[in-house]
Image (cartoon, rainbow, N blue to C red; front, top):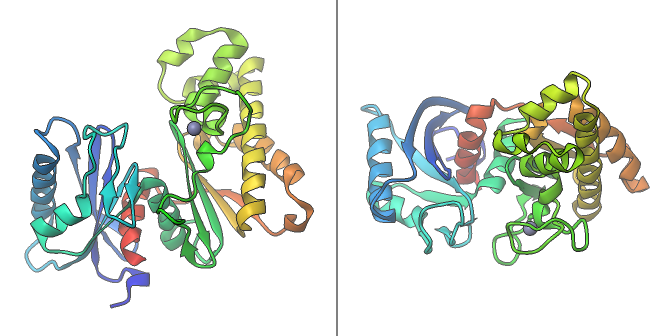
Length: 308
Ligand SMILES: [Zn+2]
């Protein structure tokens, strides 16, 4: 079996705060999709029962599932356990990989969703061919996965690559991790909305989802909105240039809601990133947007966990 090419049929599962997505993946393509509410189950065992049922329904007669890859927040790849995830309904540790193996009898791999995204880009997306790669997901928070010399960087406890929680500003904005000044408090969706609100005092923007309202304002000439993107780009450039100095990627791939704001973010980001890069890395690392379809990226990433 050639795990690196995922030649067989893989089930990718992306466990999110409200919805869990399932996708059958073959040859780097999602061929069947399903979803299941993450909330509303009596406990984690009932959730795993429902997940296994849904997976079984997706398989046609004659299908042979090679493996199951599960991406989830706070998932530890070493142990196969989701560890007290603040945004999931179960406050205890959930050994979801083992629970799925018990129910379906198929090898199951659980991994952190940010690492899954990195593997998805590496195997199937814009990171293909780059054995030194940094993938940063700019969503409600900031997730990152790092590939070094063809290996996903896991660290001593399985949780390496937390770029979002590196400190950018001493005593800066409070972070969900309990500390302050973390990168994600400035460059996530939450961060840019806070920046815009601080600049113009428009609290209505905080009631909106995502950054589309700010992007639309910037496009129509709103100076504060334009500045919010430029300022976000500056902070992100500092974080990325620091990360390059640590792991030396040949490419950085950006994914997620803010990354879809196009040139509003990318133009000032590219300029600030070049300016901030240590001279030995100039010309040796590029910064690109994800090429994976947004709806399938998490499923492909989850499936790619099984290729490790
Ligand atoms: Zn933090």
